[in-house]
Length: 267
Image 1 (cartoon, rainbow, N blue to C red):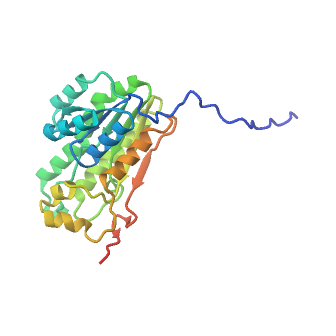
Image 2: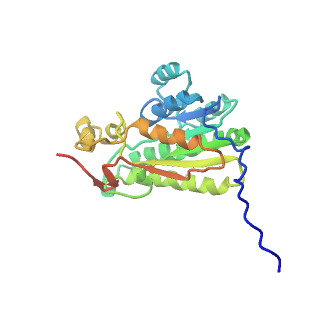
Image 3: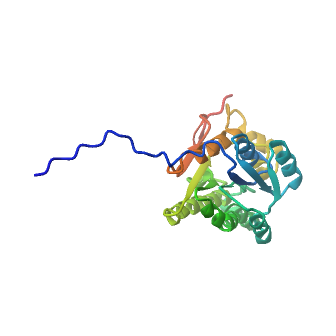
């Protein structure tokens, strides 16, 4: 009988798998970058040394932010194939794609569903994400160490009353990320999903409720809900791990939100 081979005490040599911790000129494209999580992510990645391409519909706000952080503003409507093609054609290199463009546009129960709102929600969150991903995937592959990030939501993991149009769309984003991770496993592209819970931004709840009073009520009494910079911090952390490390799914909530339906509100 042969003698057992003693396990090596030497650590695995990963010297060639360096962390892209500083952006080091890597090009990051952030969609929906004119406000909220997208704007915060663009700002954070620029601070970390990435060359940031900010993409969104509102070019005036986009240009102002791009000038402030030293990025490049590109007008983009993710629901328009021509606009998405123009974005792709104007990029020589893409190392990171942050699919952030999205939103919720109603809070109706299914029995009172506004199908126009459902179509808009699905087109922006799901089809728009597919359009941009498909257009920029060749560049991510060519980078040799691409990062494909989806800003999902805890709404993509569990449903709740009054949220069917949005939860259906975010479930779509979640399964899109899962499927791509399977399809790209042999390629040099990581697929990362960041799923935030309650995040207080200036527009998300307002766009959904169409009322400032109702939007304010969403966060009333919640001590320290997440803010956009918290989610941007998670995204920056995920894309600066050594490239053999894949953050499949990162769920992040404020401490006051134990679950989708369990939120502590102070009186």
